[in-house]
Length: 131
Image (cartoon, rainbow, N blue to C red; front, side):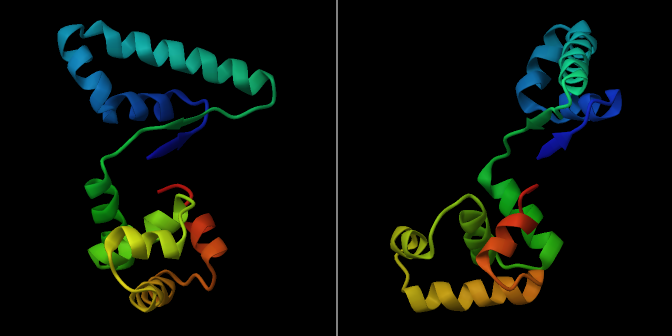
């Protein structure tokens, strides 16, 4: 998940969804408020310099695949391929890693294009930049 912006709500959302911070916040309830203050302050500093703070929250691969599948109606294999391409991978590497033929990958990629509306891999990468 990618959260952009300097607003307090965006930062609170990031802190609320962070599994890494969840255990810490359970132990130290004030940590959530403090984390929001720190990140909001840093985001404000970036804004003053004309830059935008972007915070990446790592998700496990299964959650990304499931979310992408629901969003575009992709099968698990199609979602895995789409994420592989979006993360900079090649179809040849994907075929080798999954032990499937390049033709199968081409067919899956065409299904991904049909379901997402993308026409090229570069469009797919742009479309999935926030996933």
